[in-house]
Length: 388
Ligand SMILES: Cc1ncc(COP(=O)(O)O)c(C=O)c1O
Image (cartoon, rainbow, N blue to C red; front, side, top):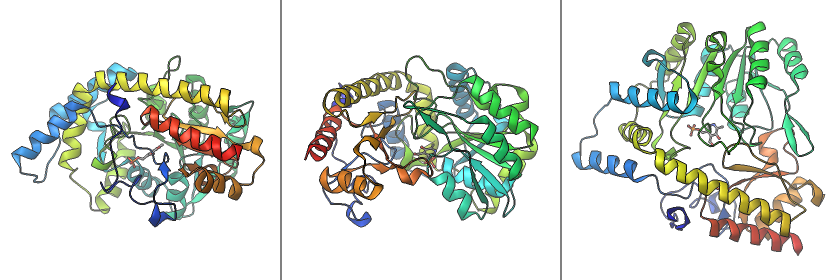
């Protein structure tokens, strides 16, 4: 199986593999933290990049009609969502778009709502742009997460929230929000004039039995208040190529975001990102299906390992994403001691739950998008550390 191959990423300027010492971690630590995969991108992407490279000219570039056509087919086929070319704004990343949306759609001091524990750049983007961070904490009970809608609406009203950043599917708790949940949230936002930035970067990783719904596709009124953030970069492991596709059907919101991006001095996308995105969406379907089957098997492996050998660590059963949220609370360690166990004793680099904000205490996030042997090695190191 192609995904079993262990490809050495050391000395490749990899954020995951080459900067442990700089970040105060042991040089030989096993990294399963940042959200990229230890798999080579699909051949269709490698060939398209090689062809562009052979052509040898990397001048200013723009996406052509067929770029849009490929995107349209992808979202229609996978999410039954019909995009229009005029809605598209390309950015070098989703976090870039989130930051630009915060600046474009709110004023300094105004409130932006998120649902912690959540992908930590959301809180950083709000605070760094001098907006007020408001949190609707997700409720954890019986190993599952759900939304406290009453608290959500109260936070919106009490803080005159202007913008809500939705993580859908949710990193790190792994929820794939149902249409019912998204509709409740959307209705509250509509009622109180809150714009929704929906980060759907993980939408292609949904486990069997679940279905991703594009927030803007639920009803036209939701489309009118939303900024939908998508990218091929998680799906096809292209994060270093920096390309994301943001869709906004409302003209006023779109112009506000475009103007903010213009102010940042960004106009043309990276040519290699455009080439890779088009090739992946055009010809990467087969590869993605194989990858998803492999990730599902990795998840089963992790689930069984925890059940049979590490029952003190609880899996928060994911519905989507390859980032798995593990509950270490039964060990009764404070977060410093837990970090010490993971880093010093197990020699593993995971993402500590506290980074994700309130409700993250006692959790760790592990990235299972790696060859199974590496996952087994990591879990064995963890087992030894806990047992000692
Ligand atoms: C929810 C979420 N949004 C955005 C990103 C990063 O996106 P980008 O590299 O396009 O900024 C990640 C990466 O982990 C993520 O998990």
